[in-house]
Length: 225
Image 1: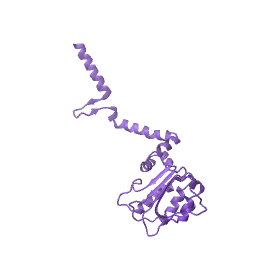
Image 2: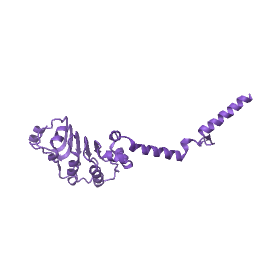
Image 3: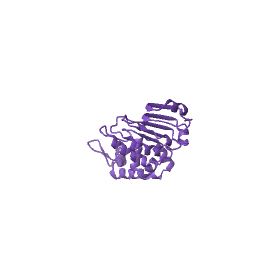
Image 4: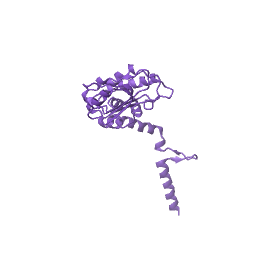
């Protein structure tokens, strides 16, 4: 009987040593998971391990993130910042850039301009710009330069969903080079003027076309699409 008691006591001491004691509130004291120093150490190891990953793996991870999370990750890691400059999908609307409901078009322009200016345009597959629910739109001073950055050979999806204004934005068809025109599969335009010339030729890879409140002539539409 005495031997059994000794064994139980030794067993209890081992448990306390391995996992820490439990106080009256039910919280464990001395547990490795509760020590701040150990937590900081683990966090440091994780942050140090991010740059050690191969660049192609980081780019793959980053490309799978939604736009808003990808931008946040770029603020925390230089490796992700480099990856953001080659992010294949840029989806820009009030939600993805983190604007409040009370924000106006000027705030939106500022954020989108920073994103586009920091992007190389290389490897960009999809560019979606949505002005839904936005006030204070003045695209003429921004859109030409943004599209010049975004429209590169290999582009597959383009969405330009603009707000209604007195004067429709004139889409710069000259930016649709052979490389862009031949790779574009999805085109969605709203409230703009779109006048492709005969020199532009047909969009051979296009599988989906959406035109809403777009100014275009029939003789311009048929040869191109």
